[in-house]
Length: 595
Image (tube, rainbow, N blue to C red; front, side, top):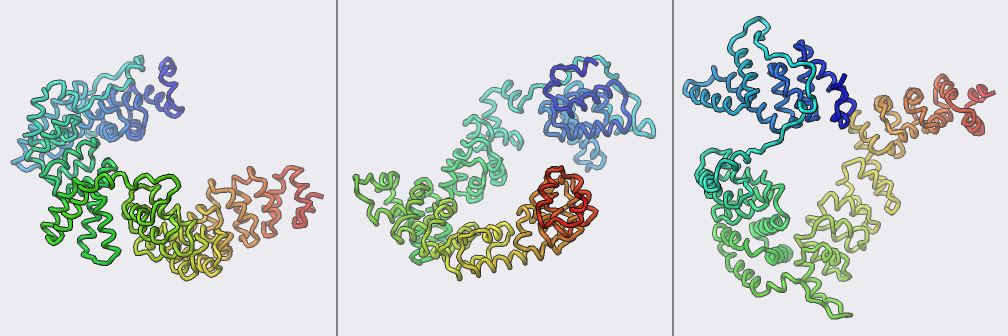
């Protein structure tokens, strides 16, 4: 047939070509209930825009309401079609609830129905009209009216029929018909929430500014908008408005927004950390050192917010804030440039290195401070709020005993799970500290990594890790044990042979999986403690033929049932049989078969 020779089919997969053929054959006829269900399933699950366009352009299929619903819910439906179908679905919902609506709302809902219906394209209006007739009165017991659009002919221009329409954004029609002056007036005075949100998301800075001055904007609405903002300039616009600058929920929403630029996020983070430290009221040397470090990193634009907070919560700190602000004005150049260029051949002094360890925000400078020969610099950089686990993790393997113990005893870094795991792999960590940190490892992967690390000198640590792994395994359900065995590539069998190989139910369920890693089958076939039932299941596994090494291990395992061994022996080639006959461990029954 000509429709199956279309050029656009070259881009289809084999499955999509099959779906296209079925749709073409069904299109000229009135579908049965079963065929309607098939079309509905395709409309809901297909990802090809051309196929979805074909379904959406077949009027008598759209009389089946679930098909319209499925097309409207499928994100792969071309946007222009999906928007129209979503209008139709919303219209049906309005009509369904019309009778149950309060009397005071019926008139308003009726007006809404008229507005939505007027927005539908001409071809969909006829479909919706038929659907609403079915909703209003049923002509026969099946609930279907006798009024149907004419069935399409078999001969169609499939290239044009399946071509998705051009997407049109919601703002294009408005921009084409409304002047900028009117858009600015609407943004500043509109009471329609959707229109206000569109104005806030506008790429035009003047429209965004007008929307921000709209009295209808609430704190909750703006916070929600910021969370989904796509335009980075919106954050600066909100931040520049005194109405929102001092509101903590708005600042928190900006900080948590996925699209917030990194420099902006850093500026807000320093303020958050500083207020948290000031709120604690700590007066220890470490806390004061951290507060001073945060003040030196505080952006100048944030001093107004810090001062506003201090006036409400801690007036006694206002003088401290002024001192740091004056210092910022005097030493701006020094703070930006960091250390001055050192003359050739002269090392930075200890005072300068401590200064950089305390105030630096550059990863390479903090890495240098972590490797500094003076322990004082190392101690200071641990308190730098700009230090991240990434820099610390890369430095831990080369740390000496003094530094690794200092990190393990640190109030915050010593409680970080990733840091604790890295410390356990450092050969200089003392045994008491290692045994304390070992309690933080709660996953089979982390414990297995520790057991396979040959650099760890403490046998007691490895023994305790093995006991923790055994307790963790025994506490798991069967499905969790299967996941752990597969994730370790069967290495759990080597470390816990008694516990794993006695768990016949878990092994039986795991071996039945056709996609099982062959390395696990090889471990089980080689192990002489593997139960006979499991060896028999391995002998029947579909991947056996592709892995002669598994077959050889089964034949050399004396626990393999005779029937299974005889069958596997027959699957080997003559050269593989001769190679096995050289092994002294081959059972006598198989030697008799060879003779």
